[in-house]
Image 1 (tube, one colour):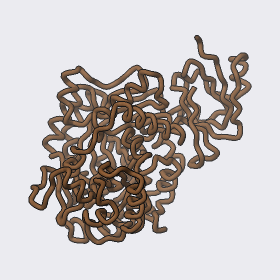
Image 2 (cartoon, helix red, strand yellow):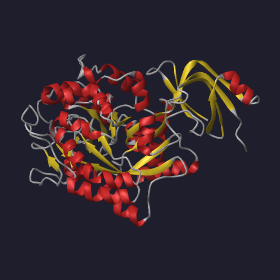
Image 3 (tube, helix red, strand yellow):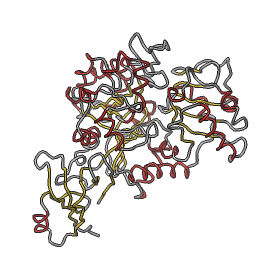
Image 4 (cartoon, one colour):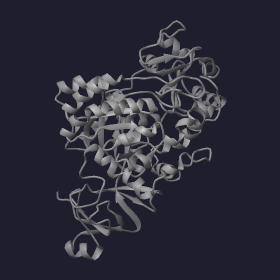
Amino acid sequence: MTQPLSIIQATVITQDPQTPQAGAVLVGGGRVLAVGELAELQATAPRAGLLDHRDLILTPGLCDAHTHLVTYGFSLSEINLHGARSVSEVQARVAQVAMNTPAGSWIRGGGFLLSELGVSGYPTAGVLDEVSPHHPVQLYSRDHHMTWVNSAALRAAGITEATPDPEGGQIVRPLGCLLEHASALVSAVMPEPTEAEYLAAARAGADDLAARGYVSTHTMAYEPPQAPRALQTLAARGELPLRIWACLPHSRLDAARDLGLGSGSGGLFGWGGVKFFADGALGSRTAWLHAPGFADGSGTGIALDPPELIRERGLEAIALGLTPVTHAIGDRANTEVLNVYDDLRAAAAARGIRLRIEHSQHLRPEDVPRHKGLVCSVQPIHLQADAPMIRELMPHLAEGSYAFKSLMDAGAILAFGSDAPVAAPDPRANFAAAVSRVDDGGGRLAPAEAMTVEDVLWAHTRGPAMAAGWEDEGHIRPGARAAFTLWDRLGGNARALVL
């Protein structure tokens, strides 16, 4: 059946230099057919239906350029520790769940920040034992680079004071917290969700983003293989409300080669990137820093995937038509990734691939110009909670943290996201943080890096589309996908409109 033609009347911001603004859009068959003024389009298509949104702003559809979509879906039914301001508050939330959970069943949750809990070191298992002695408990930090567990979880994983640190991870002593790859020791013994549970989580995560005004997302591979499989199943059933650009972990690159997997897809789900981790994160003190490191004396963080590995497997990814995508938060991690990417630029350019860094969070001034032509996938919403930690733990890097305007001026392609479930995928918070630079404590971090509302819109729409190689998204012009976001005002309340 042929889809009927529709004309959308609104204040249209197209992000097309040829027609920056308009009063209406003609759509049909899932595509933009024409852009202009209402009378003009009605004369062109007199039988088209009218969608009257004259009091709203219509823009290209929002994209969250960094989520862990199925993990986010699972998190919606777990203990939410965002905003917990003390250890006793964490205990209270865990105790409430424990009272209604059969003994021996796992309790999972997360979203806490050590800095917000008011602790000077890493909390111990005994603190959680006080409120949940009969349930194994795993709580992940907001950045997902640390987990806090109780004694029952440690016993289930066979972790004792004598257990050696795994490669790329650390078991904090006294026992209770696991950093980076050490968290997998506990995750490996947790019950595996069923296929139905994966599907439910995939649906929950996708539906939540769509309800917030998003029409697409990039999901970032830090998940089991069942997660993208669930998204592919929803896409095949016609039940996926979002377009998805997905990343493989580099550890599965050999399987991708054997399957002949490359970029692109004709539907709403497609593989596009190969994910690497150069370091950890700020909140867990595992970001990889140049000397002098963290101001509290906790060191210079943890280096994860070695630069040599990123270089070698990055070339393999490019040969398959896939984008190297590297997590880099600390200033040393970013320097090392830039060094690797200098060696990959020629191969990437020959395949039309834009090399991509996730977070680009703390930068030395001399490294900023080196980002020209690279995609910087960044999350302004993290600034709100991170800024007080930055001032405390790395004051020497404060002016080069979340350096959005400097990166944009240097010729980087900004792609905004949330890193859900690390933060809620709330576009309003991203707009507010990027424009105001105001943090949760009321201070302003590097105010010279503030962006305009129009630049933020571009970074939440056209930037992610360019990063994914989607020429039909991020602008409103003939041939583009008919996927829009409606606003009461830019940066305000939003809802998706996909035709």
